[in-house]
Every structure is written in structure tokens, then in C-alpha cells.
Image 1 (tube, one colour):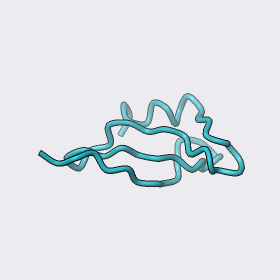
Image 2 (cartoon, rainbow, N blue to C red):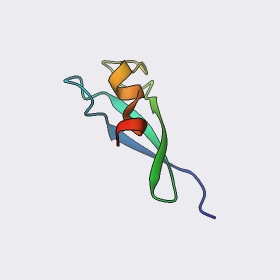
Image 3 (cartoon, one colour):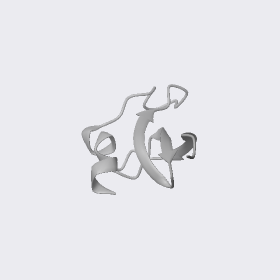
Length: 56
């Protein structure tokens, strides 16, 4: 079984394009979380971004 990989990406759920960390297991995103190093969002995410795993 493949381990969970953490990949830094930009969320495209809204106009903000926040930096997020995607947790990927077996080729599927299973969780996203805000990147605290993002100078704009400071690790927070909007509702659209948080639900991206449900819409993908």
C-alpha cells in the first residue's frame, strides 16, 4: 500500500489561489489543508477550498 504524500499546490476553488497542501493516497487527494507559509491566506481556507475533495 502506498503512503500518503504531501504535495504543495494552489487551490483554484475561488479567485484567491491560496497555497495548500494536498494529501494524496493511491493517486487520489484525500485531504487538503491551508499552508501557513502563504503570505495571503496564512493557512486559512475558504469553504470552496475545504470541500475540493468532494467536488474533484
